[in-house]
Amino acid sequence: MDKKVLILLGVSLAAVISCGKKEKETPPTRSEFITVYETSEAKAVDNIQVPFEGAQDGKIHVKSNVPLQWKYLIDLNEPDQEWFSIKSVEEVEPGHFVVTYDAASLLPLNSLERRDGNLSFSSPEAFLGKYLPIRQGYSRRFFEDFSDLNDGTVTLTGKQTFTTDEYPELNKDFFDYISFNAWAETDNEFRSKNITLDVTVSGGIFYDTRLTTFRVNIPIGTGADKSNLKYFLLMGNGERMSSKTHFIFSVANDDRVYVHIDNFAAYVVTEAEMISLFEDEELLDDEVEWE
Image: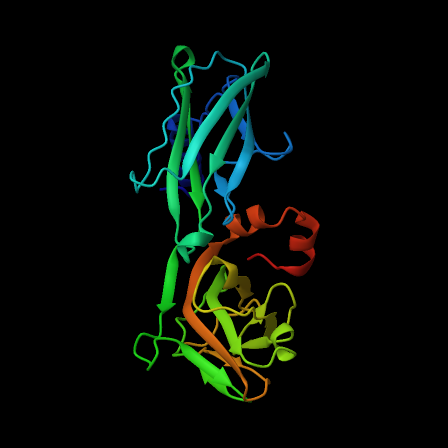
């Protein structure tokens, strides 16, 4: 067959195939909307992260251009603990509702584990609805209560140190909160106001200081309670932490001061939760490289 004929056949076939394909249709954009924000209308949110210390008269704003039927539902994982409650829903202007809520503190529980709920509202006429997850605390991935030790706590005095077991490997795409109880005993009244504990991490840094060691003041006490629960953010320095990562507790007090440590735990904090923890977005953009 002549080469020119082959070329013409090829062009004709391509044209037929091209004509047989349907152009991908762009789905229409709905004009109806329901948006939620906490402080700025320009910063819509898809979930509410309740602080560890709870909230009194916490507020969220809901805006919609369709009539809303408030059938809000708090679906608690732990129904016996009424930690979250809606106080009021006020329409401050047409289509703009302010929801006021109370949430109990997690700190008295000596735990930062996650509590979940869902706030539900909808517009049946427009076949539009929205579920707003409500969260407090974070998913725990590591815990040590030192129950295998003699007195059930780590006790340090003098220039002693304690090294934890190997810590689970961290990925660079999330951060961790670490928490623990720490209190001191002493018969030296002068030293009772200046007792410190250093926490050092291998393979990572602390968000607040950008250093590998975090120093905290330790109060006088007789046991673990909400007043001596410490928690702060840890980050992996943009790299995957070693599977042999561990924490070192150290004190530099005299032998008349005893520092007790208990309930050491770590909780996963995702990128989205990080943003909700820190309102200064420029700080996040400047200091943290998201990948």
